[in-house]
Length: 154
Image 1 (cartoon, rainbow, N blue to C red):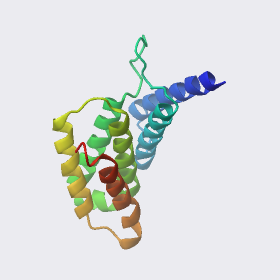
Image 2 (image 1 turned 30 degrees about the vertical axis):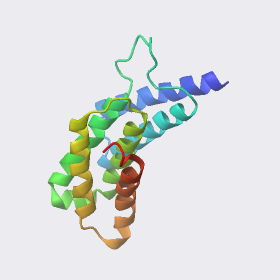
Image 3 (image 1 turned 90 degrees about the horizontal axis):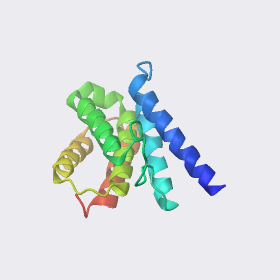
Image 4 (image 1 turned 180 degrees about the vertical axis):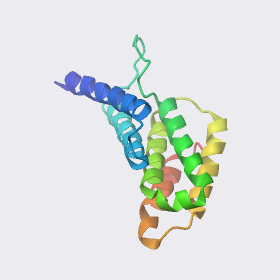
């Protein structure tokens, strides 16, 4: 039954990536939440001793790999932070992307310094973003959680 759960999680992750990439009707918030769920699937599988992409997997074309997750999350964060008004409105999107980014770093085996510099720049920008006090909690909590979890690698 455990293998069925793993297979189901892998299937759901593939479906979510396809939905993320191919469905134009998704709102920004939905896209962020898709990334958050894919990150949680990665983390959950690793905790069980599995990976979303195992050695020997033949068809990996639509698998949301850790590098795909990192790229998708950083693209969202870069685009949102480039527009100050957008950054103030898209708190859930940015918090979700930060959580996905953290999950990507947690399960990734690569040590790409280029991405680390980009992530640090994003984190500094997020932490300096001025938002309403009631909205600030989720965004800054996600950023600080990422820093606490990955400070040694960043």
